[in-house]
Length: 387
Image (tube, rainbow, N blue to C red):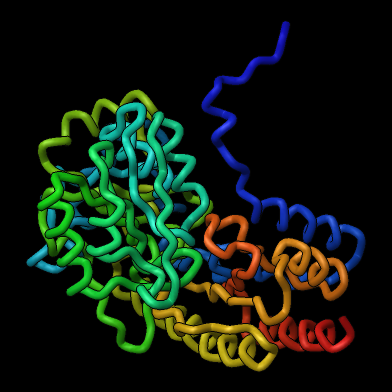
C-alpha cells in the first residue's frame, strides 16, 4: 500500500507550541526543572462545584448520548447568562466538543472552495487551518499596536474582494490579549453588513479581562453573526472538551445536521458538569482566579520591559503577553530554543501566530503561579546577562 495524503494536508501547518511542550517535557524527564510559559491552559483545577456535579451525574448513569445540540437545560443556561439586550434564544445555542469544533462547524456552513476569510496577523494558529480544511483561503492582515493588534473597518474594506465571505475576530485575542471595544465591534459588524459578509467572533477569553475593560458579546450587534465560546479558559475545563456556538436562526437546521454527522453530540458528562459553571459559588471562585491572572500580568509586563522586551500595549484580556524581542534577537525561534535548553523556561516563538514580524516576537503565557513567573524572569535575566 502506498501512503498518499489528500492535497489539502500540504496546507495544514503544525501547532508549533506543542513542539515546544514536547521539548520541555523531554527536559523534565531528564531531571530538569522547567517553567511552562508556553501553554495556553489555566493552571487552576476545574472548580469544585463543577467536579461535584460531574460526580453526581456519573453516579446517576448519565453516560448516554444527548441530543445533537446538547442538553436543553444547559443550552438555556448559556443563553440566559448573556445580557437581555444580547440574549439569544436557546434554540440558537449548540453545544460542541470545544471551541475548535464550533469553528469547524461554522466554516463548514459558510465556505466553498476559494472563499476568503479575513483574520488578524498575529492570531491563533489553528484558525487558518480550520479555514483551509474546507477549501477556504485565510487572508492574514498585518495588525500591530497602531490598530491595537485587531482588525478595523478600514483594514477590512481595504482587503475585501469578490471572494471574501467572512471575517474572523478574537476578543480578547490570542496571542496579544487585545480587546475590541464595544464601539469598534459595532462598527465592524456594520461594515460586514454593508459588504454582504459574515462576522464570526471567538469570545473564549471574554471572562478574563482586566482594568475595567468594557467587553460585551458581539451578540449585542445583531443576530446575523456567529459567536463562539468555551468552558475551557475562563471556566477551567480544558480537558472536558466542551464549547458552544451561537448561530443565526436561519442556520439552525444546518447546524443540527452537521453536529449529528460530525460528532453525534458533545461529551455527556461534560455537559452535566457544566450545569454548575454558572452557580454563584463557581462564579465567585472564577472571579478570584481572574484577579490572580491580573496580578500575574501586572508583574510580568514590567518585568519583561526591564529585560529589554517591548510591550507597546498592556494586554487587556486573556493570559498572554506578546512581546517584541527585536532589541534582543532577530530569530525568535532560536531564542526560544536557547532559553529553554539553557535556562529551563519554555516560551513560544512568533512563528506559531502568523507571518507579520514573527521572527521578532515571543508569546509568554502567565497561566502559571506568580512565584514561578518570578523565577522565570530571574532565570531569563541571568541568561541574558551571559548570552
